[in-house]
Length: 137
Image (cartoon, rainbow, N blue to C red):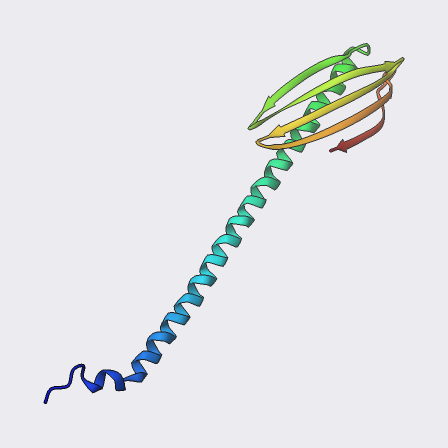
């Protein structure tokens, strides 16, 4: 008499337990690998944004220095200008507040990152006197 399926198929529980164990360990390994990849990607994005922020701040400072140089060259200077350096650009505006008082606003941009500053000058003659130099939102 032939029995189908053979009884030996149902009696081999050690192979079933091994197979399930391998699947569970594999799933845990895949979950750990995916987590590490996503953490690395997030860290990479953060690092790139910090690098762009530093570059935007450097451009912002470059425009501020350019504006101060314009004021030093001509004490009556008011106006605006821009610079393009590297992967970004910056703009500056010098406005007169009466007498020797000036306000310089600057903005440096790299990618989507923008850094801005406001500089308040209370005297331009005989030398430039900066009262405040603040980074603003």
